[in-house]
Image (cartoon, rainbow over all chains, first blue to last red; front, top):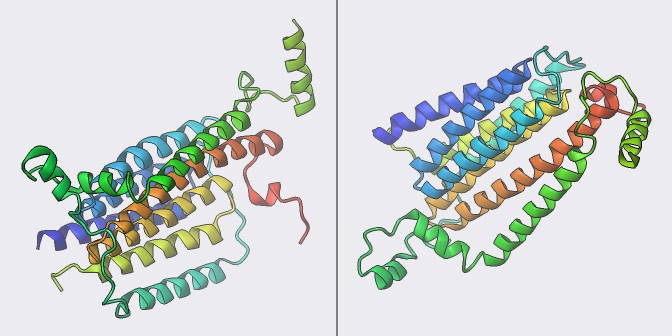
Length: 203
Length: 102
C-alpha cells in the first residue's frame, strides 16, 4: 500500500513536471521543473532499493548538472520568453503519441526472459561484510554497489573517470576563452575581440 | 492493482521517454533540446533500475551509473559548445543557427 501511494505520487509529479519542462516557453521555468522532476525520480530509485543510485541522482544530477545549467544560463538571456516557430505541431504530437503507444505495448508485453539468472545478485557483498565486521548488519545496497563496481566494473569505471576528465578539459577550453568579456553587452565581433586579447597579451 | 511491479515502472519510463521525445522533436531552442535529452536519459535510468530490481540483479544499477557519468560529461562539453554558438550567432534558435538550406 505504501509503495502504491508513493509510486503514483512520484509518477504523476514527474510526468507533470517533465511536461512543463518540454512545453514551457521560459527557460527558468523549464530548468526549475526539470530539477524538481529529477528529485522525484530519485524517489523511484529509493523505492526500487537502489539507495546509492538515488543519492548519486540527487548529488550529480540535481546538484551538479542542474547547477551547471543554471551557471550557463548567465551567458544566455534567460528572462525573456523563447519564441519558437513550429512548422507542424500536429505531426510532432502524432509521432510522440505513437511512440508512447509502441513503448507501452512493448514494455507491458510479458517478459520473455523468465529463465534469466541474475549475473550479479543483490546482496552479493554480504559474505565480505560478514568476514570483515563479524556481522552483516550494515550490508546494504552501498556495499553491494561498491563490491560490484570495484571488481567486475573496474575498467568501465576507470574509463568513465578518464572520460569525465576529458570532458572537463574540453569544457574549460571551449568556454574559458575570453571569459573577461561580457557576451551580452559587447558589440565587437570575434576578430576585434581577438585583436583586443592579443594587445592585452603584449602589454 | 495495489501491487507495484516491474511493468508499472517500465510503462512510466516509456511515457517519460515519449515526453522527452516530443520535446526533442518540438523544441527549436538548443538549451531546451538539452533539457529534453535529460528527460529521456532519466526515463531510461528508471527502466534500468526497475529491470535490475525485477531480476534481483545489480547490473541495471551499474548501467544507470554509467549513463549518469555520460550525461554529466555530455552537459560539460555541450554547454561549452552552446556558449561558443551564442557568442557567434547571438541566439540559440536552430532556425537562426542552421547554415544548410532546405
